[in-house]
Every structure is written in C-alpha cells, then in structure tokens.
Amino acid sequence: MKNETPTASKPNQNRAFTTYSLVFLIYMLAVILFGAWVRISGSGDGCGANWPHCHGEWIPTALLDEYSTLIEYTHRVTSGILGPMVIALVVWAWKRFGSHPVFWASIVTTIFIVFESLIGAGLVLAELVGSNDSVARAVVMSIHLVNTMMLTGSAALVIWWSTGKQMPHWRSRTPLTWLLLVGLVGLIFTNMTGAVTALGDTLFPTSPTIGEGLFQQVRDDLSPANHFLVRLRIIHPIVAITTAFFLMVLTWVIRLREVPKLTERWAEIALAMVLAQTVIGVINIMLSAPGWIQMIHLLFAQFVWISALFLMLTTMMNSERS
Image 1 (spheres, rainbow, N blue to C red):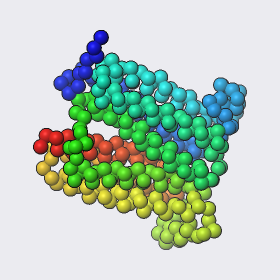
Image 2: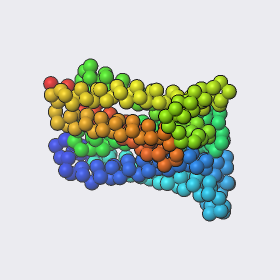
Image 3: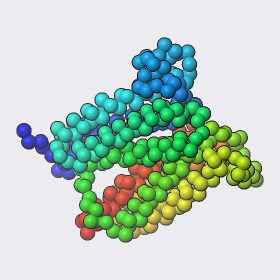
Image 4: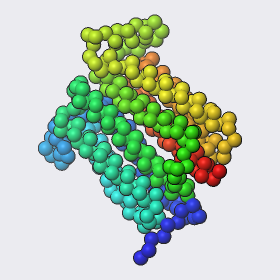
C-alpha cells in the first residue's frame, strides 16, 4: 500500500504527530538534564561498573539505601523509556509521512539515541564517572555533549518539518547561510568546552566570588601546579563570549533587514536565547557553578542551538523563494 505524504498542504492533519514530537523532545530534554544531575551529584558510579545491570541486578536491592544508586538507576530507567518512545515516533512518521524528511529526521534521532546510550554505557564500563578526573573522561564528555546537540537538533527537525515546512536545498545557501553555519559550529565548540568546564567545576569546586576576587581566582586557576581541568576553565568563557557576540550581531542584522515574518521571529527568538544564556553564564561564574544553575545553563544551551538551527533553515527557505 502506498504511503501518503501529507506535508505543507495539510499541516492541521499532522497536529497530533507534531504534539507527540514536541512531548518527545521535552521528555528527552528532561532526561538530558537528569543526566547532568548524575554528574553533578557524583552518582555516575551508583551502579558500579555494570551496564545495563546495576550492581549485577536488574533491580538493585540497595536501590533505596544508596542515594547514588537511586539517582543512577532512575536515570537509566528514564533514559530507557526513550527507546519505545522513539520507535513509536519512527513508525508513526513512516505511516503518516512516508519517505519524507520527517521520517528521515526521526531515523537520525534514533541513531543518535543509540549513540547516546553507547557513550553512556562506555563511561560506566570504563569507570569514567564519579571522581575520575582523567583526560579520557574530559574527551568523552565533550563527545557526549556534541552527540546530545545532534540528538536534540534532529528531534527538533521532526517537529519543524511535520508542521509543513519545506526541506531546503543546500544549493540555496547565501552568505547569510554561511554566517549562520559558522555560528552553529561556534555553538558546538562552545558546548564542547562547556562540558570540560562543567566537569572541572564538579570535581574541583570553588567558593563564589566577584570583582577582584574573581580575577584572582582566574589567575590562580592558570597556575601550572593545578589540575588540567582547573587550568582549562578559562577556555569556555572566551569561546562562549566570542560565539555569543557573533550570534548577537548576526541576529540583530537579520532583524534590521527586510525578511519574511518567520525569519524575523526566529531571529528575535535566537537573539533572546543568546542574551539569556549569556546572563546565565555570568551568574554561573559568579556563583561558582552550583548544580541548579549548571542545569539551567545546559537547558538554555539547547534552546540557543535549536533556535539558531531553525533560523538558518528559514533563511535557506527564503533564498529558494527569491
């Protein structure tokens, strides 16, 4: 039987699927944030060096006795729920859209979920959790966060295309598209350095300080006697500020141009997200990265990433029409 492919012409008929896709993305973001709490609370070794078992059991007997076991096991269960959820997403996408970008975006989402699981399993089995402060853990954490960005980006594209947006062709690129692509690459590097900094803040916490005390702390962190995770703390703010300034200028310029309403709206959203994330980042530094602000910082990093991605897609769509 031939699959129907209702796209831009019948967006209202896809509302149920779009709603489910949005719920899926929101739940996935919650799982990502809970994963950050696993690191922040030092619970990554709560199940020992066992995966998928926890202390050699499917349901550990010490579940309610050890806080770290409860946190790690809960994260595994909530992550596992993503499996049947993404399968339902793929099946529904195929039945509703057939061989359409919505379906292929759901397939890519599934692939990155598998990668996310494998990376998480690798961290546990290699014991790159808890108090481990090795270079290997820092590298894998960076890769982990990049994979997370690809995962949330592909899941967001499922929503985007299910509302009837057309798939732009790369030949529709313009100088503005290239600049936005540079911004997206900048966000990837920002998040990679952020993962290393977050790890350092967790393993080598400091006391909140501002003014001269903050500058003195930065100078102390750069001492060759310090652990490499401490010395690398300065990298993330530099990369983040550079990328944020670039995106702020770019989105502001887009707003000043005569562009379609959709592009203007996403330029405003992206600008607002970048501004909010910058403020959150400053607060994070001033408060010496408490766990709750780290999680907010991570959440807004995803908001910035998705809004910048959507903005680039709208500019490519506009160039196709011109």
